[in-house]
Each structure stands twice: as C-alpha cells, then as structure tokens.
Length: 398
Image (cartoon, rainbow, N blue to C red; front, side, top):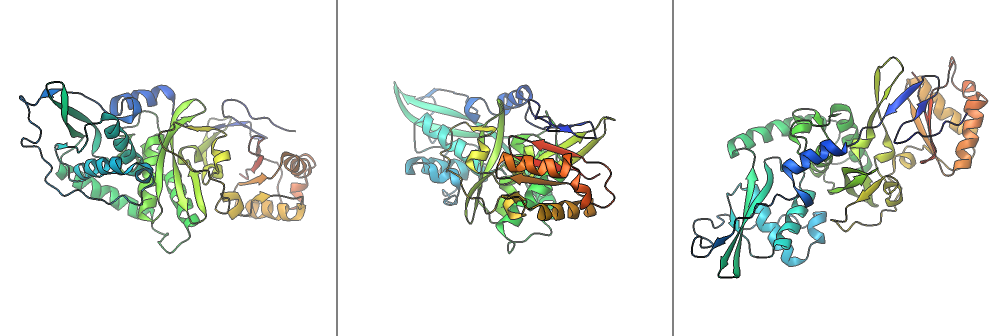
C-alpha cells in the first residue's frame, strides 16, 4: 500500500489511523501580530515632520555613547553597503544602550529601513524593542536631519531582570553541549531543545520575541527563529533570521553557517505531533528541516528577498547523511538492522532515499511483504508515514 501525502500537510499513519498535525504560522494570526508589532517591511514608521525652527536637530537628543562596530561577522550586516552599515551601527548602539533618540548620519529613509531590517535579522535577542518612530527635520523644503527613536516595551531595570531570567533558562537548555562539540551537534541540540520545550501556539503572548520562548514556552515561527539565532550565537555559530512564506503563509526560519557551508533550519516545522483516532497527541521531532539545502528549502519555503541568500549545497551536516539514514542503494540487511535498533530502543526512525524507486523497493520488501518482522522480534503491526515529496518513510514503533 502506498499512502499518498494529503494537502496541505497531512499524512496517513498506517494501522494507527491517525493524522500528523503540521504546525505552521497561521496567516491571519501572524498578520495580526505583525501589524501590531511590525507594519509592512517589518518596520514601525510614524512620521513626525518638524521644521528646523520648531525643532533643531541635535537639541538635547544627541547620542551619548560612542558608536559600536560589533557586527562585522553578522550575515545581514555583511550584505549592506558601507554607508548603510554605518547607520546600522548607529541604530544598534542606540538600541543596546536604550537611548531615547539619536540623529542618524543619513536623511535617506530607505537606508534607515534597510539598516533596521538587517538588525532584526541579525539579532534575535532584542526583546525590549518593538520597532521605532522617526522624525524628519526640514529647513524650508530641504530635509536636514533624520531622528531615530526606538520603541521600547520596558524600562532598563525590567530589561535587566528579564535578561537574567532568559539567560538562566538558556543556560539550562544548553547544558550537555559545549563550544568543543561539533557544529552539527550544536545545531541538533538547539533544534531538539526548542522542539521539546516550546509549544507552537498561535497568538501566544510576546510571540514576536524570545520572551515567549524562554519564559512562556509558547511561541510562533518568529519566536522560534529569534531563539535559534540567540542560542546558536552563544555556541559560536552564526545564523540569521530569514523571512518569507511557506505554503503561502507568512513564515520565518534561519540560515546557519557551519564549517562546510550554509544550511537552512526551521524549528517551527520540525516541532510536530500525531493526533491518533482517540484524539491523543504524540509529539515528535521531524529532522528534515534541521539542515536543508536551498533545493530542499524551496520545496515549501519562499524567502521574501530582503536578504541576498547563498546557494546552499552542502550535505555533510544534513541529519540523514550525518546519522546514516540516507539510503542510496538496496541493502536490506543494513536497513533491517537500523529498523531493529529503533524497535529495540522504542524509537521511531525516518529513512530518506536517493530516489523514489529505491523508496518503493524498501516499502515493498519491509512493509508489503512484512520482512520488517524478520528483524524486529515481537513486532505485530507496522506503523509508518510515507512522504513521496521528500522520498522518506518514517517507521513509528509504539
């Protein structure tokens, strides 16, 4: 029996008669949140034109901290032209020091918008700021200055307290992994921790920042993506938040830099569950979204073009290659031993195949002809999910 994938993202689970629930950012809920916190282009714009006579630039609002240049290794920062990087540095310095307002060294609104969007992509941990307002100063018809005022959601004292709480939880989640571990182990650890500890809940409080992740354990795709960037940075891995759509819905995920190249990573879609016929939910982690190539990412994701993205072709740190679950030839004993190991440990296992014909051959032998019982002593029924789009079969032993 070859069970087909049902739109938009449901699978039949043989013998369990259950449905795989796909967790994604619902378009209406996400749109409402985005409108509240980040209007179109992820930027809060509230224009307050003033004349030079009524509000001279610099009168009591000059920045008091030296401009910091701390983002040279950040992905979005490196995509900017040098003049825009300067504006990025000015705005980020103001945000980090929680300055009320500063005058930028540009009067170009598009430069300001581009710089702010890049900051949001590079820094997932800016939980105390929610957009900005700007003021244009004119002399006659000439624009002479542009003032940037971040919109803060809390005072500095509260920010310090919340930061300490976040760091405590983040430290607990990163126990068992260290800077000396491989980059693959690091990204898998972060992927696992977020999937296991954080529930996808549309409309979750503070869902557009990491407070929802670390302090409430409920978030949406934006919160997951911000948390990935925040945690991986603590482990020495550069990543950036990518925005766009997935299956037609607004979505956010990550681009991560590993030693052999770039990969895409989507924790939101990796965190899923079964709903059986009795209505019980069984969570599981789907690793197809742990370390994707560009071709794999584009099966279901469409970036919005705000960032110039690399062509990701590396596979050495892909989950299936790394774990030995990528099958390229017919080796029934090897496959059977993998199934037996999963059965003995009471775990599920997903195998990915290099081509559809090989997947169908494995299905025919192990499922249709029941040879899985030759390797799994005591097995009386076969539970599986077959994904023709990704050439995968997931065996669920429960």
